[in-house]
Amino acid sequence: GRLGHGDHDGCSLPRPISGLHGVRVCALSSAWDHSLALSDSGRVFSWGLGLCGQLGHGDEEENVIAPKLVEDLQGTKVASVVAGARHCLALAVNGCLFGWGVGKTTEEDAVDALGLQLRRNQCRPLQYEGLRLSRPAPVRVLTPSE
Image (tube, rainbow, N blue to C red; front, side, top):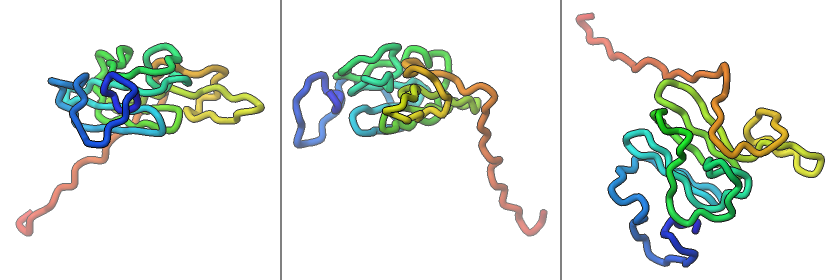
């Protein structure tokens, strides 16, 4: 299901992802076994392997074989997404940052991809409290008369 075509088959030639038909995709991000698509309206879709909650659907689904809306980000216009090995991040247009996926740290596995020192995987987008990113002001080119 990593390709998002609704099946487990491989594909030797590029073809449209039917689950995104009618969605104007403006950005994609993919990691080992999962992918994210960002629509031009700021909606986030995910698919692939979600054993650590990295799909953001509220569970640790083994396979999501077609794009599925990340419901918990509804009402938040997302500007950018990135998929990591076992986690994902989304930056909203208002500067808020959300993360989900591997969050637990154990003696055997010291991975804390989200940096939140959680004792469990984060299966839904979680806003980083107290952290707000801002974009630099656009560069203004002055003319000689100014």
